[in-house]
Image (cartoon, rainbow, N blue to C red):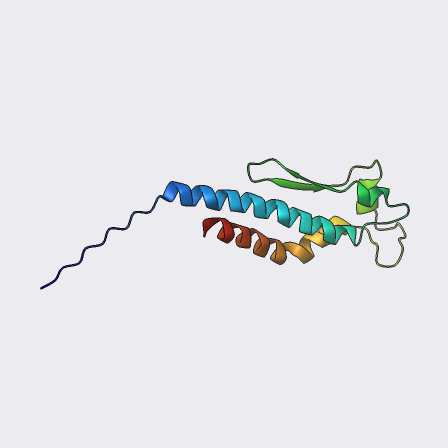
Length: 116
């Protein structure tokens, strides 16, 4: 009789670190994706509001998408403002709603990439 023994050692710390790093990268990329969707709807006159859009990553698992002009919030919230065709209030909110499935896929893909 022949006996074969195999030992498999898995360094879970390395795997978890890779998953974490991939998730953070994916989260940043997902934020960029949502910003791009939002920029397709953001009210546009001179482009200042669109150019002010940024994705901020705290490196700990939180990403913020924001616009930095004095009128960004009123343009987002005021439903009575008139905009050019294809441009609308709630531009960021709509982008998040539209892009959340793609954002989740981006995050998952980056985590898989790092873990493999």
